[in-house]
Length: 115
Image 1 (cartoon, rainbow, N blue to C red):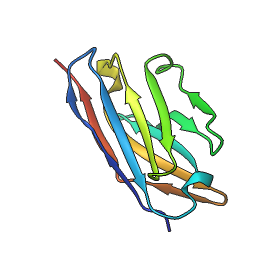
Image 2: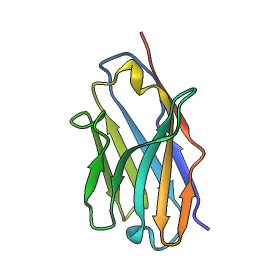
Image 3: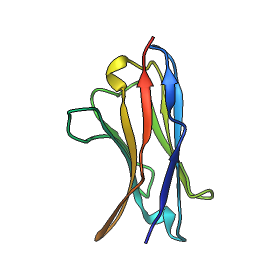
């Protein structure tokens, strides 16, 4: 069983920045494919960004150029740096870890972008 604990959410003005962190348990973190998803009220959960065990990254079109996913295998942590935030980025952000055939989720952290 893998436990994921997110932190770093909060209220920020449009154009501002936040950095989300997700700390994972387990000794094989380096093998996980890690991702960030988000779910806005009344909408389905969507993929924001993913980083593979080899460090390859992929982003949703809506966040390309603004968000950066990274990982520190020594700290069992994945990050999501969010810049130039927009009101439409408001959502609960969830950390995800995948190692076949298992899929794990964190409890989520709220990000609110509002003036």
